[in-house]
Image (cartoon, rainbow, N blue to C red; front, side, top):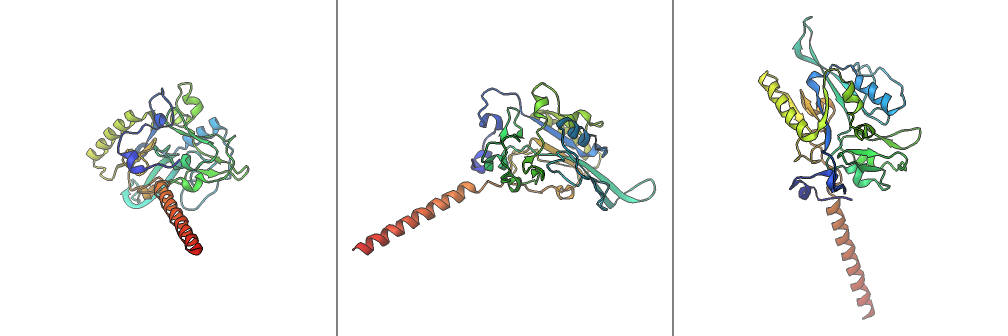
Length: 282
């Protein structure tokens, strides 16, 4: 069901409570600090192993050392390799720097994929995360264009959609997700979302004090177009550099206004038909 975004953002919003959970744990999430990501791809491997995600052909794009390309139905964690010429002189005199970042589903506070799913395959968990029940998914694909981040994708073999579950099965027994568990530098941090946001603010201050003025947080603000995300990032450049939308907005935001306009148009049409019919009789 669609909602009024302005109204939803006017007050603190707890997605688990809004989904009907009367008693639930604190909202959990990811904080990915890209400043310490080394591009090892341990998170990608751990995600695939734990969730039994099928392999897919790896290719050399000729654009970077990234061999998975992006998030997809069979890539729930994706480590981007971004080479920036003319930024920092290395020991060999080459002026470039590497930006590496592990991307994942954002588990939005206001998730458009939930709004458009006709079967209930996509649901909100008690941890505030968004999960796909693949046994209920009918492959309609409505959620694919609804996601403002382009995260959800259909698997060609069966037509159903797949994405990160934040290891819902592990959370249920008190374990952290496989990707965070495997990260050797703590670039991927897992925990209560409120605590992660506080930790991220401190880390941002440290980088600014160290002269990294371009460092910024992405997805942490509950006042943004999706109500903040359950997986947010510390970036060293603009979001577009990482392939992230600079100002994401929940794509179902305008649905209430659109339905109101449809209702008004239908009412006006019926009134015109009634007037015409009465005029014809007279």
